[in-house]
Image (tube, rainbow, N blue to C red; front, side, top):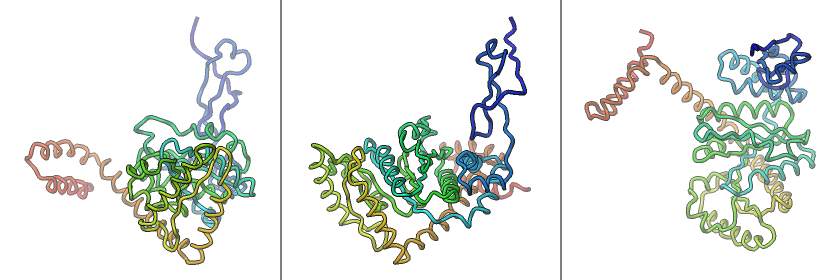
Length: 370
């Protein structure tokens, strides 16, 4: 019996929102080959269709537009930039909130409780997750939708992982541009969750208005291992799980954090970073945290710091993309790739200095046209 599978033109795509859709055998062939499937390319949308779909908040079109932005293919990047340029008059009207936290702090529970609270207040919430470490661990952040089941079902919310491609430069471009698309679609609160480690906090700080750290009780032990640099990035420390028998510990941790924060330079000029408590599981303290953010926005807009930060972030974005492009271009150059292992061996064996090796490689790159 032949294992050859018959494909029919009347197959219907099963999945929506991806560049390619999985289609399965229909009709009499289905019984013969129940597992047969074929990748069927869907009709490509025009730039104007993407723009119109995003502006009317068609969630399928928005998801497809984000996929387009995340693509590294030259033709996709060109269309993505055309779409973004047309949508620029409709962006920048949201409040951008970054959220980081120690493992076990309950970020997903907090984001779901916070997002639902904001939706009930009449806001529209987009949640973007950043994980620069996913390419190292092989993990996936697609689980965010299953971790936030109630929020993901709310029509006023949109949850989207933002893969970085393993580079912080990727986070910078893809997450920022995804954020712009969500703003154009009418989402007025953007929550950016960093689930990576190290430098990801600095990248997220550079693309949001308000940055918060989720912490647990036992602040004394945590502060010992916490980098001072990370603490200087945040506008608020939120001690989660302040409920039941844990509440007194949470209040004690709040006091410890406030003592520590008193000696640090504030992340935002004119704003005093303080610790607050909440219980995301029971929804306690969520409204207070929102009031803190509202006060922050009012204070920084009045002082001009809000707009100044956004202008500074745009300038930083320019330089970050230039650096990312030059690095990619340098290491992709065929002569550099050929020469690099040889130069590395010369340096390791002590036959060539590092400065001399770098100059040699740069010379090869700069003379690439000759």
